[in-house]
Length: 351
Picture 1 (cartoon, one colour):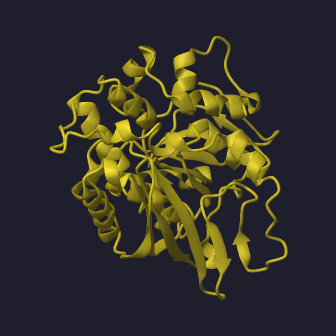
Picture 2: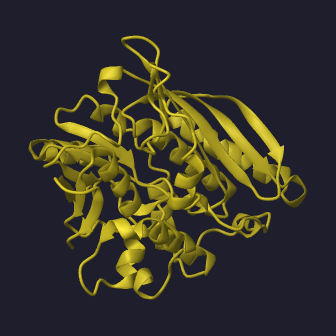
């Protein structure tokens, strides 16, 4: 089990949800954004809201584009320092998922001041700052409010050469799909709330969610890499579907994705998140499953990943290089999980 906090306050008890499982369901988000103005009137807005990409991108000049994103959520663990680390790692992932390098961040802080000791709030901010320091950037400011539930995250800014920008919409037929982190963070978090996550599972959860996706900033310079996104709150199926829709192709899941230790046993025993159901209800009509596909397997594929891995679409000839580089960067379970093929914009699960 995770360590007991000296303040004897469970952060997760102060929030109705946690991590990327707090995100609005994909269908709800699409409805909300359906009336947003497009990027067409702004020639320098290279990436807007049209394809649900990971960040906005504004061309500064021929050599530089500014990448901007924001990400925040409620606690997924009870340790305030680790909560801060996870939230910051997750926010910076959106910069790396565009092939960019972060330059600085701003903190987003909402805390129930009367219900939490100041020291706990300080530890959350310290955790976030430690991750930004590891990424080589400062937290240069931010904004705070008194809120009913604890919320923490970052506005993150980065730079990328416009010619090396990677989006979720530029995959090509024939590309393989490579996933760099194992799945199961949402199931771990559900087990944690149920006091069913052992010490080894908690350690694996922290290690995965605080592993920076710095590998992404090099992918724009890797020959054969065509598209990139990160797998977060909508699960592997949801973010793969966004990639398929962006490219106008069918995405096939051809291999069982790698899982965090013990996650399959937890899923088989019925541990799951409510976000899995919301995710499936939002996009299940665009997913084709094998006959008699086990419900727990659907839970794994729709499981919301807080600070999840990168999903890379690349020419098959580049796969060995990408996997070797991923392993060298500290992603030992990186694996090919699917491919893009000609066909309607949907996901077909083959395994």
